[in-house]
Length: 328
Image 1: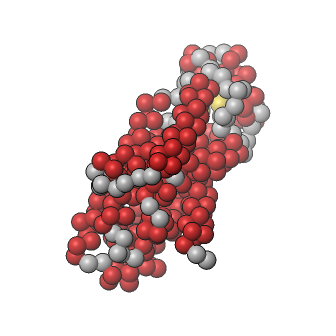
Image 2: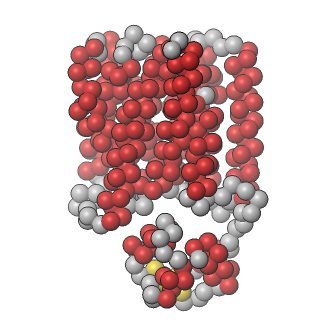
Image 3: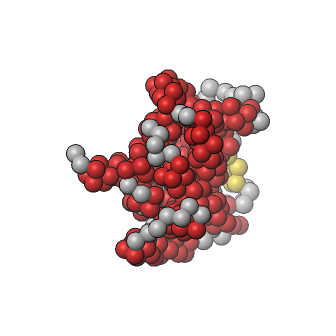
């Protein structure tokens, strides 16, 4: 396989893996908070890298550690928490679309900060991709006006972090093995992640409920495949191509993410509508596990009501109709 074929193979694999990560984050957030998710993802990935790739650390030279720290912060630590907070407030498919600002930011900061040149066709390609991104974002905001789109700013900030990460890897870490870069990143992040997790109530309030254990399972998959393995592939892709080509994976990610979002009940079509806030006031759920089952469509709204687990003191027709149409 030549380098050109290798580039496109890596890009395709990454689009599938990272496109699937958004729905995994959404599912994981049913049992943990955004901060806990971000910290646990780094801790799990660290254990995975230490177990299978720790010998690669020997390849890291003293000159590399500064840039490994920078890439750990901009490419993993900060975006990890920003994405978790955003997905807890915006549909995962919309978040994946917002992430498509990464190629533009990679080009801008690559030219202004790192002195990289870019070709006219790269700039044209980014503008075309960005136009498609803006159309999808505006359509999503129109169909889901009840979501808090201020959280979109978190994804824009994360995309800037990814832009710096790609340019840093290309300029300062091209002589270091891709596996060593990933392992070095998580060697630096392990202790900070432990500290962040200990500042939450994760250890003091932990209960081995089905919801919590399922969330940890999703985080495990996200950590091993979506972070450890995917990060290594991405670092290699940056090294054999260029930052802009590597960042263009974010144009393919929404295709996969929207597919998973639709399967999970998210909408990105002309059928979207807003429900007034007063339609769901004074609604009480007496069993949090039952609510989780409802969200995952393992139990219908009618069954939940019949079991007496869903109590409405002021049930409006709009709320009743929405719940019945959505959950059965």
